[in-house]
Length: 77
Image (cartoon, rainbow, N blue to C red):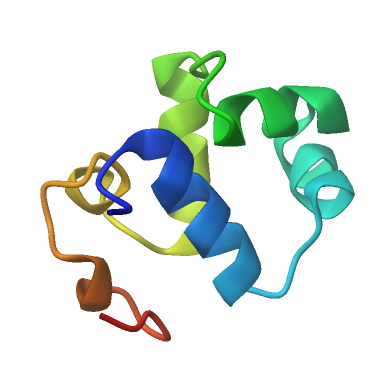
């Protein structure tokens, strides 16, 4: 559970107390785009993925489910 990019992105947004509009603004995309990523319908360009990792202060390996979910501050098992 929560081992794919879409799930991890959703978890991070919720842990940080942000809504899709706030994330979209920070990343320079439409809120519908963030929703599409979180639903697993599309995946952002790698440059945006790197920006996401920087904004959320997490590693790329965590975003892609290679690191346990609880390895991020605030996440529960």
